[in-house]
Length: 399
Ligand code: FEO
Image 1: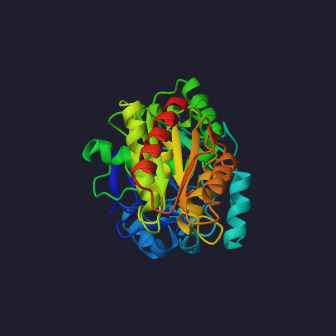
Image 2: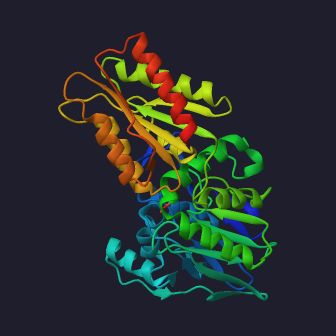
Image 3: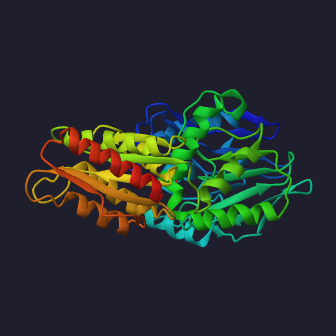
């Protein structure tokens, strides 16, 4: 069922309550998601912005038909052509094959590469406009790498100003309520941060530039309609402020995240002792511990994104480090975080390479490794744990 946003804008997307992972298994989605598509009825033109993921294509088209005869859609705007937004386009265009598809040149290349169809593409650039009648327009704003090269936003100058922002300002958050004022803010902001950290943080310089560029235009703005999650209408400035904060490469809370894996609890005991030392030396610092093999990988990455420093630990196994830590370190490298410090630790029995390897991986991921870390042989006794506490205190002084 369509949901009304304003008199002439309706949400015609799909809420996916069952989604537990996205991008294959790269991103966990603990609260489901939604694929938001919007119908904008101008005075003389009706525009559909984006579609939904392929498994819901028939449902999407059927519900759209309940909303209006499909031949009344004058234009389809594809703001970004990843499959979660373009997946129902083929089903829709089977019904209305000649409808113009407005997208960036990169968007056309992606649509052709995905669906191999010679649709009625119309390439647009920043500043190009679609006249909607009554003096109102939809203006396109290219936003490459927010989140793919083809991404663009669209600004509608009616209804006090509406920004259709595609992945930008979105969250993987399923809700029957459509608006920010109808859901718990802490839940939505937590999901928005997880989304930012895992999907957009890699591209923070481009995100920061684009948000500032849009703000500099001083456009009236009453509503932000992203392509996932809730619509920001109570205070769209709130999520813009958050994006300015998160996309600043110096962003960090006063937090240290300790991520470790453990075989027989020795590395866990070390992690807990280091945490005690940090807290003793820096009581105002939040310290969080995560076992990489038990906790959600994307929640861990979100916590690291929020931290000023990270400690990574693993026992040495087969001359290396653990499978779970290898995964975290690979994902961390991809986020390209800046301005964060770190070090490595771990227990071992004989060869003891793990902490050195993790330290090198931290450097490769762009962290400033502040020291050689700490390692302990076999099961740490009271003296060894005391040394770990002292190490924690020294680490706190370096970050
Ligand atoms: Fe929601 Fe980049 O797709």
